[in-house]
Image (cartoon, rainbow, N blue to C red; front, side, top):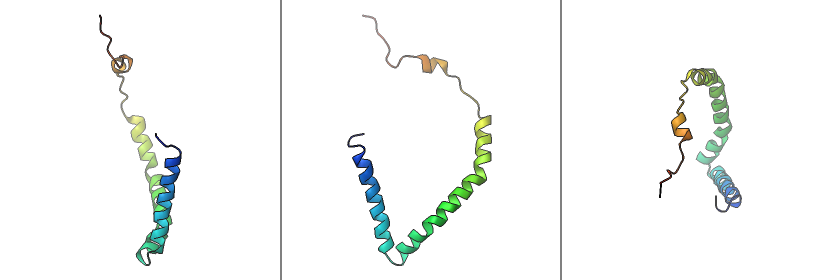
Length: 80
């Protein structure tokens, strides 16, 4: 990607500055920032609640063997 890794750091800096500006927006922004850890805990608890089902679905999913598609060249050769 052009400009990497500088653009990645600039993006993270921008997102952090948005969080800081939200924190200064009393009362809505501070309440929003304060609930982020609660949301993170809920997302982690939800993942631990469904991960066994996700693993079961993944392990019983049919496997597709499309050997012709994987072995085919990306560009067809033409005779001259």
